[in-house]
Image (cartoon, rainbow over all chains, first blue to last red; front, side, top):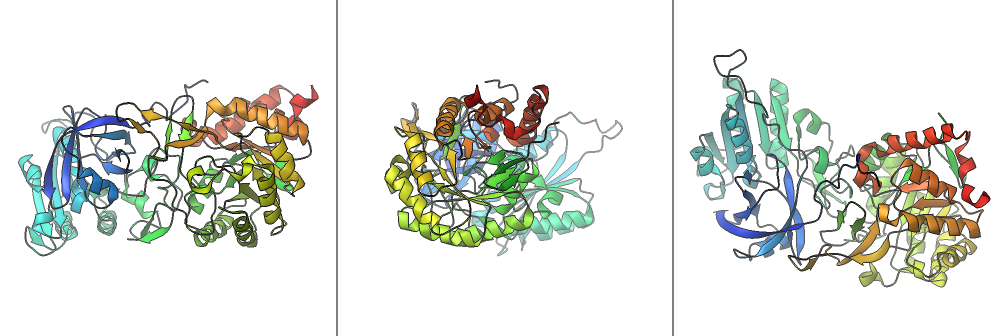
Length: 285
Length: 307
């Protein structure tokens, strides 16, 4: 068989064994797992984590550099329940990275004294455990010389994740909690709305509850600010064959997403309204 | 450029490439998009009457030479099936093949009755999935009697063309083909995936598929497809065949049509070639037909049997 035009088999679609090198709690029921190695991922991409004998689920990648892969995972179902019982040295399967990540600079930008050398103002908005891939994304922007603002939201201060690491990394870190126990009382969208009206923002990237992302997408489109959202859909294969993750337009979120522009996302009638379960049934957000 | 339109059981297809059941196909939008990308027709995932959960992940993986899956026929049941077929008929004029499945012969009659109301162009009966044996027992396609019995109950419920999807994992596929044609099938689909097979991860000492075993597809099974189609066409020259299993190029498609296929099912090739497969393959087919002075694509069907 001639394989010059083959696209997918160059990707690793068989799970490979990875040892849990370390883990720690980020918040109640949210844990970051560390694996040694790399998936050669870009910020915003995802991988499939397989708990042998249980199930395999998609997770966005919280870090993939310096020989470490970090996955920040919330305990929500049988697979993660089992994962949370595993110890350091136990092995799981990983495959990927898959999908299309957030746009991050790939070139060294001009210096401030050069033409076009103004620093880009990037705002990242994370809601709940959706915050996980944004630090990785923020680091890529920061290394390219952009100013990064991280808006992190949760229901309560004990559920905030990556807020300290974000501040320690030099990101301007703004917090919102529903009950006002940390940062501003209310939603991340309120903080973003204020920033968009008071400052010049070049790019907004967001990951979190879909209704939050839809509100952000609408806000950015209205103000003509570039915006990308990370859309989570039920995934089985992760590489464009099973069709489980398609939007209502038939596009495969495991390949064109999870990160797409706000314009693209608003063209999906399901965005912010519903997703589909393992048998393809509609489930309202 | 030679036109690729073709007639199958009285249904006009703009080209012979049809999406095989089980790939993409979860929503009407997904199927409609496959038509937009160049497919001549589409086949739904296997439709059940009641919701059917399928197997846990991992359900599939690919290698350079073959692909394995054990999705386990997941489907949300009749209500969603109705939604999908109705919406799809609104979104595209391309022929629609509704693939149906059931755990018992009687239930095949019930799902056929429901799907008939929606009037797809063709009903394809899936009696040959090799990765649900632990749940449903030996596939009906492994016995001439069972295969014929399923065909008969479906025939009683519909006047639409029926294609029965056969299993390569039998001693004599031709005998099963003859049995279902005698029982009222208008056409055959050959072949379902091969196996089941098994693969393990040696580090984790765990099977690569959660279901432990799965059906094999992809380029490695293409010779098995050609042989099955060739034998079926030789025995049943008047019965049109949807030839599927490992077709990975325009030349493969032409080869399997010359062996006796009228339509060509495409599934795993989308893993190897992505969305561009449809147009690329049609171009390859058309170019070859031009270069070899064939005016009509239908002239090549069963050509190997005439030489």
